[in-house]
Length: 315
Image 1: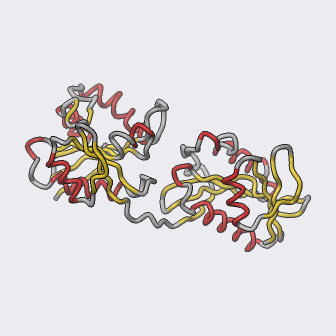
Image 2: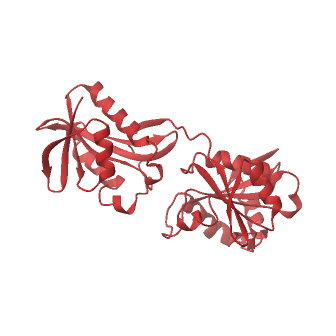
Image 3: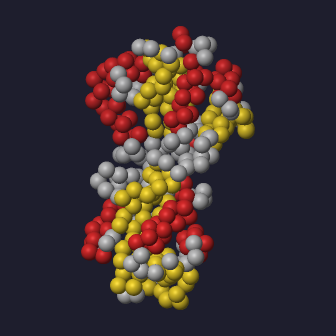
């Protein structure tokens, strides 16, 4: 039975496989070609695991998950999922790359391996389509992509660019109390939004500082994927809930997730019932926030705190 499994299933077999992979084949680079077992276990593998979590990475890289395709007790291929697109990946290699060992090609292994990898990627990749790239002189790999629902959307002199729909994008939005097990998430924000949003550690510090005011900090999830955070607490003057912090990771903006999450938070305030009003501020110039809050029924109070515009909503 063919199964895609994460790395560290069997580190010795995985090391031997990546050691024997070419340094570059059909555009998939392998900087670990020829690596020693010691170097793989002590340096390369810990680095791979860090990069999967988005830790200690240069700015031009994105997190990447490494998977291996197993046929019973043998590794027959490697698949990689780049978690989201930057400009270079959007115009280049895309989300997914893969390699099948020569002796296992032409047996349908790549088609099944890509199918399983796409299932895994649906819980990781925020874009509505998976981006892939294939060399024009590699019709077998193109066939694998087309069998998995791909379509050709462009080309250059040497390569074809393929898109595969990211199915199952209707996600359940839910809130989970922020705590030691879930707050260490590397959220991404658009450059113009970075001045408007506090880091997760700052949000938790503020929640601690306002604990006597019944502060509640949440991680926002789309299914099992953390996509943002929120914080609110009691405010005595004027009497109401202070919706202090709220943001959605830039990879998940524009899909209605923020509106759904904010609606759930407002619903919790209404159920709590201590106050009948909720207040918040947005920084002047943050039009995305203003549009969201106005759509949720907030109105301007006519007051401001420096460059922060104060809004209120009746619960």
